[in-house]
Length: 194
Image (cartoon, rainbow, N blue to C red; front, top):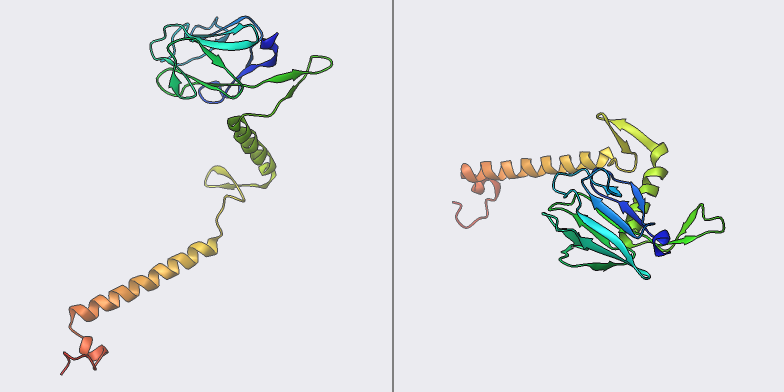
C-alpha cells in the first residue's frame, strides 16, 4: 500500500516535529481535534484538506477552506498529486508545513529506512546534526545558550573600534584646520598662502 511508504512531517507551526503516517486511504487535516492531522491554528478550517490515495499516487484536496491550501507556494483549487519533497501550507500564513518522505519497509516492518531526502529535509537534518555536535561546547552568555563557534573573537571588535577611533580623530583634526583657516600653517607652500 502506498500510504505505508509516506509520512507527513510538520516543520513549521505549533506542532513542529510531529510526524503523521499516511497509512489510510484518506487522511483529514484540520482544526477539529478528531482529524487525522489536527492543526491548532485559528486560520485553519475544521476540515481544511484531505490527503488521499489513488492507485499508486497520493493526492491533496482542499475541502473548501476559507484561507486556502498551498502546495510548494501555490494555492490549489482542485485536487493535486503530491510527490516526495512537496510542502503543503495551510491557511493564510505559514502555520503548518507538511513534507512527504518515501520510506522503504525493512525485514520486520517495525523500522523504516529513509530514501534520499528532499532539499528542505536535508537542511533540517544538517541543522539538527550541527546542533547536536556543538551541544557539548555551549557556553552561557547573557542568559542564553550560544555555541562557542557562534562567538566572535574579542580582538576583532577591539581592532574595529581602534580604527574607527583613529578615523574620527583624523576627521576632527581636518575639520578644526578648515574651520580656523589654518591650511597655510599646515601646508605653507599652497598658492593662496602669503
